[in-house]
Image 1: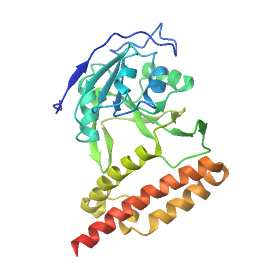
Image 2: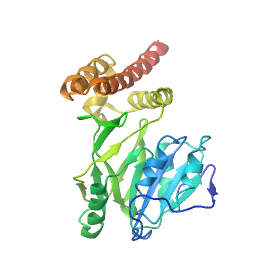
Image 3: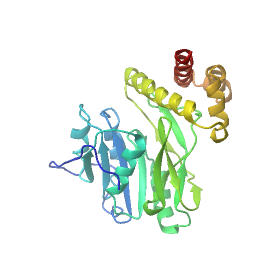
Image 4: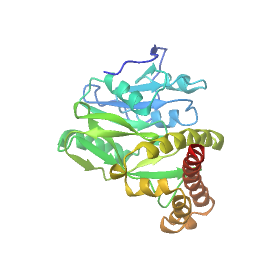
Length: 281
């Protein structure tokens, strides 16, 4: 079990919130949701509003200074644990250590679950033919869905005893000991934090990603990672990939916004790698 660097349990008077029918909530011994937060006041209430069908939600907060904790405490099925952030994998694994349920629903603070997605989850808990299920994503920008996006599905529903997180660049991966399957319905990814916060996050993520690319052995690299390490190709490729292949050209200003975001991410990684190469000379 990972040890917390700083852990506080926050309790306050809570009241049930309107939302999805919680009269027959999925019991905590069956399924617990785990969410990581840090200054998510623009997102967290919308996410929790779609999780009232769960008896228990574990939230690992990294020390929010906005209204995140206040908003979380307004939902009767939440428990908050504050832990100083070190890595994503350590945060997630700490969250898992707080759960006693058979199944885990792993969510970001800006993930919105539709009614169809929730019903599919309930079916999978009964069918029990895999130990982890991958979910795809539908991106929402400025309250409207994009035609497509370039994210890959990730495991969000899994058996606690069969899985553990590990760090990989700026993010985390789930090591799964058993069979996996895909969920039919998608999660709505609806991040409404300001652009300044997004840029701050990407600056930190690009540094971690560049460090990973500089230290990861070549044979273990994916095709995309090898392209990124060359520094030249991925910013240009990502721009045209999003605009043309992913049809962002037909999504108006929202498509242009998404294309620029994805291109900036690749530019930041290339800048980090170039800076490191120059400093080594």
